[in-house]
Image (cartoon, rainbow, N blue to C red; front, side, top):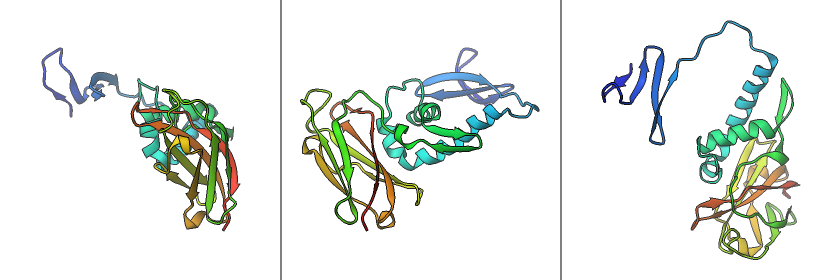
Length: 213
């Protein structure tokens, strides 16, 4: 049941008749109830639903990074922005055989500059070394920008995050992987975040590497 408080011109919340009232980020709005259709879904509609299900469950594993670092989507939430972008750019295959396209996956998106020649290697057991070259430091490439590292293990269907492992100026960070990832392949990503500006960079995909056991 809807709650109607402020007169004929006021906002309301909940359902009144065929209209739903709600609020998002302080903006009151109304929308009509969805129409129920008896038509069978087309293959295109089924593919869109599969993309949504595939990516939503996947991205929830890194929600803490997306909520802070997926930026420049002012008309929607960070998670919905990430879903929208990745449904268009980061799913491969044809329905019903659809998969996440790891090299094109975007989990951080913003105005900070990235880095030069990033790379990953696992030369020591249980760890991955992330390396990069810094360009000239400026307002959008700060020496003290926080480095954000993300690895994903398809075999374990899980992420591991390092959000406070070092700063951009270091040029290298060693990530100690969880035991369940040892000896397995992981996809690797790097991005940067400025605590001072509250700006993020768009993540870079560094490739797939096998973590030495």
